[in-house]
Image (cartoon, rainbow, N blue to C red; front, side):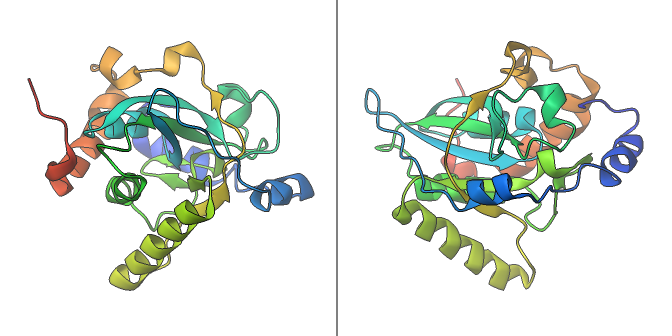
Length: 218
């Protein structure tokens, strides 16, 4: 639910429900062997979950070397998740983005830096007003090299902040593309109250932190 009705109401709605579900199928997802996505036309793919996928998509699409970010669902134990199903908190999936990027221009390591710089890394089961296991933070790895990068950066950030970092680290299994109306939502609906009050401020805050990785404005 991406509405300001107001934000306080959203916070109350999601904080009382949709806590992370623990079951054998979900544990199997966490312990599975990672699937590596091959390069296509020289482009790689990476997967991140960090609250509302509208926000995360906009963040990554502002980064130099990223060709596209696609909103969807990942990290769960059910097949063919939808927005409505994922909002129940029972699918195990989180709102996620598929980041299609040129590894000659931007590294996976930098994309992980972008991930941590564009969120509250200590918030559990959500970002900002969006609360629930479907909004939890997850970084997906496709091989041991990526896993090591993630864990090293996560440990360094925990030491820097003297706090527990909420992001979970999952082996990548499958990404399910979200419904068409979720794609490029921030660009297509700049006047939406949620976009105005949550998504755009989050994007600007990230851009101020990491100006060196941003695409040039034309």
